[in-house]
Length: 63
Image (tube, rainbow, N blue to C red; front, side):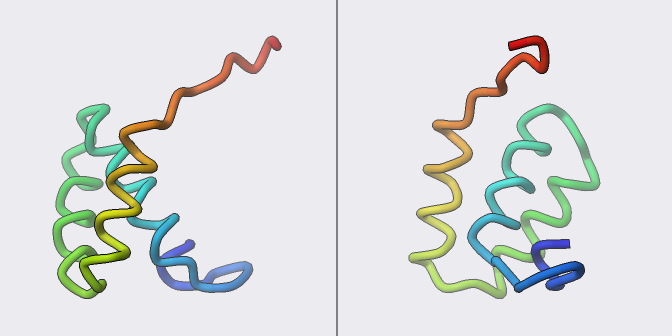
């Protein structure tokens, strides 16, 4: 949705970050989407998205 602007503005960096997170969790489709989408983005967006994904830590919904 972030990559296409569905329901809001297009946010390439956040879209790519979430593709990274899902791919790291083993989602094969996310890995394909990440690789395909990354090719359409400037290196600066790719770098920031990868760094955000690396720092991402999920929070428990019980907190």
